[in-house]
Image (cartoon, rainbow, N blue to C red):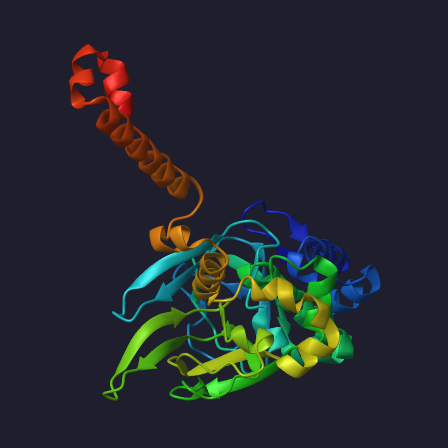
Length: 342
């Protein structure tokens, strides 16, 4: 039997599995699974007890091998920065709150944060990756695609695509692992894939003509790079992306696979590409080429062009009128009319 300290309720063995199954059903991570699949997973859960506040359940940077679901008590996640200081990232207070899910999907995943018990006595349900794989087998890929779908849906580059199109895209993704200092892509080389960072950290560096590297962007899980490779066959990498954490896992989408599956939507994504300002500049050049010599000289568009042409017309008419009638006419002209013509 298991005693829940917060309520004093005792869960006998016969009740523990149904209660665990209830928690699994309300866990967003497992929403793609059927009742029968969840029932099989519930049989694999084990109860782990932490008796003192301040105990670490998982430690940032360590390899992950299991998922945890809060059964009773409270805990909190802390992320250690480059300066060594810990920052509170999330609190776990309700039964069913979970953490460590990536360790079930990716064999090389590292813990992103330290989760520490904050109540005196805390009970957690744990599910090991080995039991998860043996129980679900190929179905574990379903959860990986569901996780990838969340990442794609949150990417601005893909916001023009429907959920069905994004689901198609998840079937094309492949996981790739890298170590600290590895270059995922190199500046100047031809691009052939888009990458989504799932675990770890990376940075983009641009090398100047003098050979100096400058960091232009930091990447954290959920962010992506290399999108031009999907829309342009001869696009070269604008920067080198290098792994800065001890380990990193990325999902890669190859251009060839993308074009075969989602080729018709290429133009939609092209509008989201990073070279959008250059695209607008090209449109401006074409607009000027089709305009009159005077418009080309002025080089303005829309309301600005109309305003300039209108003022120029009034100046020409006013100058012609008063030159013909003599500027003495201004003495008998009302202030409003004089301002209008002058």
